[in-house]
Image 1 (cartoon, rainbow, N blue to C red):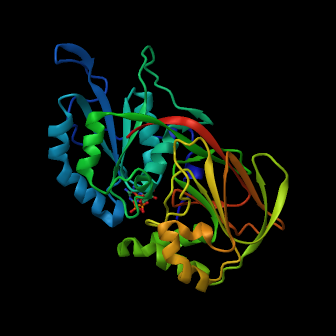
Image 2 (tube, helix red, strand yellow):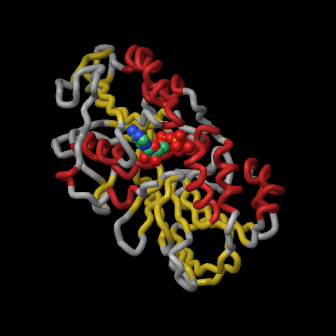
Length: 356
Ligand SMILES: Nc1ncnc2c1ncn2[C@@H]1O[C@H](COP(=O)(O)OP(=O)(O)OP(=O)(O)O)[C@@H](O)[C@H]1O
């Protein structure tokens, strides 16, 4: 499995923007002004970044079925550009290029992994990517047509994996500022997440789950059980909101929620919300595999915070490191393997405007 962190630091010359194979409307750069209802309004330039391999290939099939409806619903007001990803991390490059070209919105079509890459495409070298065409007052939006296996980010907003609902949201165009998480490790190169970042067992579970996507949401339970083989809870040093370092004994997992759900519907950080301007940090300690099995239903309905050895608090930043470095404690962000500890997780309040 590839971590996008390495790819995100490639020089721009190596990146390529794949234009729509079948542009549905005039491409970016065409005349963008239309008159509707007697008032002059500019046509919005929407770039759809589609992962055809999402949900074990179902995303690509659904997208093809969706195109005629999408065209009929949106193309009277919007220029539509579709760009299919060709492999992991490609959505980052497409997004950056689209923003530089002056897109009004980049819409992720796929699962949380695709959304995660699109979010990372909004940034470059620690700063937001800007429109190179300049000279206008556009606001840049991110959108989502959730068509993944877990599609956990969408659950926080109560959105279903129903692309018609998503197209309706895009057509209406209501927007809201949401927070973005930023992760900085030893390399210093920032990496961004929008939903949940997590450490240790759950991150390892996500790593394994990605091999079983053909089993749909069951892949996360299979991944978690596999992750318990050879798993050891670890004493970790944690610093919250730039306070003092504290040792947390026998940590099973640390979950840093901007959104509420991960693992295909587990309500792991039930008090988190992407517009709250902070994370909910949930720490599980001293869990054995049978605790996981016995408490699984509580993880799904969010009542696990009442279980012994589970703690929760809100925070704007959290740093986590091993006491004795082994380089074996997994970190994942939005369900994507990122690397190993140490890492610092901080919130960027209201960093992105989302079509909600
Ligand atoms: N063309 C491609 N071929 C293979 N893999 C791709 C391609 N485009 C993107 N990917 C990778 O596919 C992975 C999964 O994508 P995505 O998140 O959309 O679907 P999912 O895993 O089924 O959904 P979820 O993350 O919500 O469970 C991402 O890690 C992404 O890097």
